[in-house]
Amino acid sequence: MDVRVKFLGAAESVTGSRFLVEAGNFRFLFDCGLFQGLKELRLRNWDEFPIDPASIDAVVISHAHIDHTGYLPKLVKEGFSGPIYCTKPTADLMEIMLLDSAKLQEEEAQYARKKGYSKHANPLALYEEKDVRETLSLLHALNYDERISIHKGIDIIFKDAGHLLGSAITEIFIKGDQQTKKLVFSGDLGRYQQAVLRQPTAIEEADILFVESTYGNKPNPFDDPEDDLVRIVNDTFARKGVLVIPAFAVGRTQGLLYYLRKLMKEDKIPDVPVYVDSPMAISSTYLFFKHLSYHKMGEAVKEFAQELETNMLVFVKTGEHSKALNELKSRAIIISASGMMTGGRILHHMYHRLRNEQDTFLIAGYQAEGTRGRDIVEGKAEVKIFGEQVPVKCKVETITSMSGHADQEELFQWLGNFKEHPKMTFTIHGEGEDLHKYAQAIRDRLGWNVTVPQYMESFELFSGI
Image 1 (tube, rainbow, N blue to C red):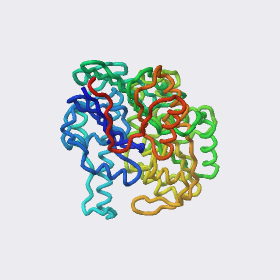
Image 2: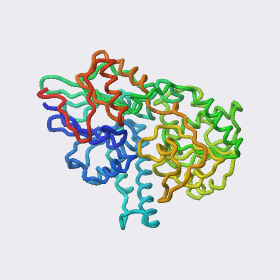
Image 3: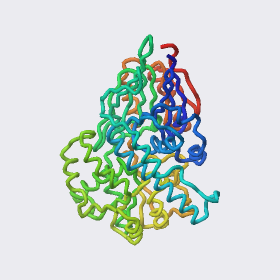
Image 4: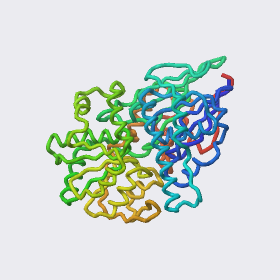
């Protein structure tokens, strides 16, 4: 049996995770994400898929983030009808996130038609809710450490990646006529110190390794974010402003709520309303308490679960309520999605509040190249929202320690668990010079054979196994 891989995404970019693996006559896709960020990347979502979707036998999903799952409904729309394997929390999160993705795309297309800022006469969504519903019917949800066969001689096992509720490192065992080989996809790896999630599972062996590279060349030592949150919240209120936090709906929002509630109980910040203005974040928050076995079971987590929707926490469930938040002048915190400010309700808050000198925007996560979030972090004087250039006059703060990605040393800590070096290691989910420096660092520090794949590049992994 021959085994090959083709890099259909997340190759010299941090989005669009898609890897086509062909083992003999069986063809499966690992991850099926949307491209985000730079326009040249986003346009790939509209290109004809490089292979016939109907010819793909299965899809394996690492976790629920849209850059790993967001193209699935389009794949199904174009003819894919096989099983989609993921963990149980990922299946629940995908229902929320993919339905939200379809809704956002339909709304954006409608808004573009109404405002006339699209170059297309009749802007359309990439896919619709019915495509998502069909996609969800194909899901096969598994537990961590559950070994199943996705084809004769091909088994998978999901291990905890510590990046997101239900996120997985995936071990793939391919048994040929002569021998068995093991592929490992790291997925996105989490941090070793986290408030809610566990640290990533140690993996000790792999013939072929695909490892994420988001912070591969960046040290981001863990700093307890509490001191920064105390300073930022109190400074904002002293200036009689509102704190706005663009945050990923799944993971980051729940971490922020945990810390804010803790600081209020300790009287380190005022007990003010925290508005969660993201339907997806609201639904996801409840899932964290449905799947308690998938993260730390500390008393603090249980206690926090019992305090949902207190006077401090306000779930903003309607568009009318969201718009009413524009009237808030001070002493309030708004958490809204999307985290990179590429779409969703956060755009309306940006449109109204970026120009307010008394307000603060707190950036609490990685911002990919080409996103509004990256522009704001880099100090751009204005950003384009709804076809209009909006001035950035508010105060901008960042907290990098709340990132869900392992930093450089944590990645090397995880790589250090391997007893023998893989035959080949591919660095994926990274961008620019940092990606190549990370690959070289693995060569220098570990002596491994490392390749930085390019978009659409193919490699033979094994021949005649």
